Image (cartoon, rainbow, N blue to C red; front, top):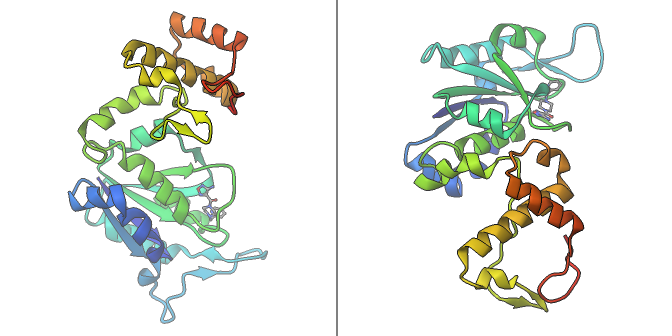
Length: 254
Ligand code: 4GX
């Protein structure tokens, strides 16, 4: 899958996306990430990319021509590429949307700065507007990186073959169960004994119960969407009656 990022700050993308897992996926050729500096597409002798808004008001607006020329340069290589604009006005980003985008072969991500882009950019070139959340960033770059990260890990081969197949069941609107590694006892806080029992069905049951417990406590809104079995519902009833002591006999901080 290929991402073409249109930005005024291409340097922001180098270390976050080229490091660790995504860096390996790039080396393997599974994903391609290219940054395009919108400034390079300004015809102006001072390479101006912004201007004051018609009608007055504070701040600057990104001009239409450099963005149009940058998008058209990508489209000349692939006319069917879709263009996404990152903006708080967009459709809320979600695991479901990440999954849908991961099936696309090629995306253009437009990162806005200042007060946003000239409205005609939206009208003429944008196929989809996406928001990563209800807060205001200084630009679309971090939002684009969030999108690329979440989408890339769903592409087969990026995480390693079996992890991606697992994904659908993993995010079925339940939070993950608690994880532990050595040491067994850290300052008196012990690992739950069941995890050392070697009893795989008991471990699976404990994990399912903990996932249900966490979700009902921290994200009851997710629990309402989860696909719960009859056994899950029984577990939830136990939880709601629940004892919340851990194996050291200390009150559980969750
Ligand atoms: N999820 N931003 C876009 C420029 C802007 C300003 C006004 C439209 C209108 C964001 C988010 C986000 C900051 C990106 C403002 N665009 N992007 N930028 N939340 O906050 O995606």
